[in-house]
Image 1 (cartoon, rainbow, N blue to C red):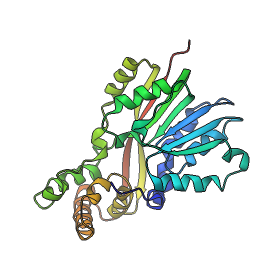
Image 2: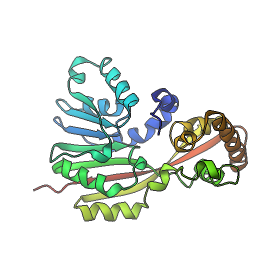
Image 3: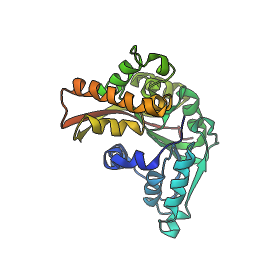
Length: 266
């Protein structure tokens, strides 16, 4: 898959920040937290978490060279004391391994890009100190009009031959109860898993495509030649106008799954 485009991803920065703000409203941080952010992107979330601690440290992990480069540029804009407590590493979260190294394993909108979530969650458990916390947010919006329309279009006669191997990231996300059971089997306690819907006003279905181009559309666009990408987007726009029943303003509802848990204290 082609590398991420940080500027495109941040085109709807305000909306994408809402799940993180919901986490911040609940998450209590100590003065010396040791935090790892799996799928850290451009690093702003990890920087904010560490900023809220007196002497905490943070390591950001991401498989995108462009995202890690942007995160390292972020360091240059931060207060020197805060920047010194942050580190960003180019690494696939599926390869992440640590042993009782962190008090908080955090991940925001990253796990959906992996196919098998249990090994990642097991690695998170091993990475936590006794009593440490897991906090994850995972997009789980495969039931929404935009993603359903992408799947229908990709399987249509016109596009099936080119897109038969492309897969919507949300299809890797399991039902809520599966995560609750999996976390318990791994050994986590104080497990809290829930969905939350976020409502984002959009000016038109075309804006939903702009949103999706940075994330859920990537597997489909990457599978197409440049000329075909424009045709696919045009066909998708037609499907979205039909699905939303509007060519103008609409509410784009985005469902997200939150996972909270602890590694037991000794």
